[in-house]
Length: 241
Image (cartoon, rainbow, N blue to C red; front, top):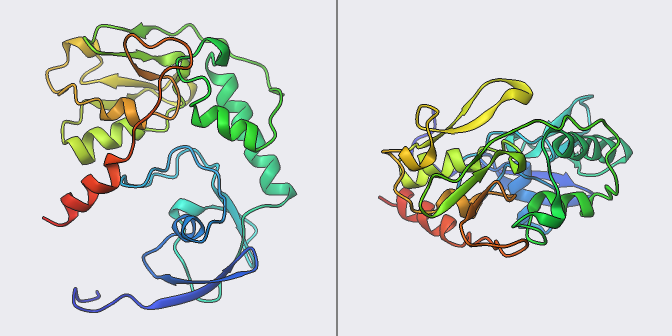
């Protein structure tokens, strides 16, 4: 175990042919973002812990046949990383296809139209149509909260809301119930959001949501813009205690 006073050693690796210096506690995704190398992601957010849920950030590492999630793979000396290839791009488009097909994403009437991370990633990755059958689930909308609404049709189960509520706000109102395509975000013990005794109505979950699943009431199509600048600051203050 390394003592607190010891500095982490520096590793040198290549990402898309670029020599990169990294601490051993840095992930490939962090290094790519620091060096302006694009790696798509939907569940990652600076200031929150990583879970490797969306799998959009998969990369190839020479010497390994597997695809590795960049947000959960730490730098190693001499590592050679490729962030894009025919294989990677095909998998990423397949992931976007499945995310759209699992729920009822109709961008034209969504409050986050034009400000949606899923919509942006689909455009960036060249997804022009969905190649798998839609499931068309019948999902409820929870508008019981005074200020906010939960629309399960837009949810991609990134768990950003769960993590920001737990790690930053400390309320742990949100959690995930069920398995597979039947998984749902729930408030407290699966009760209406408006009846939650743990929710502080801070709105952090709404601001980190990548889609229109969580939004502020009174927003029309395309009007829900996210304000996420508070996250790195709050994490810095928390870690500095």
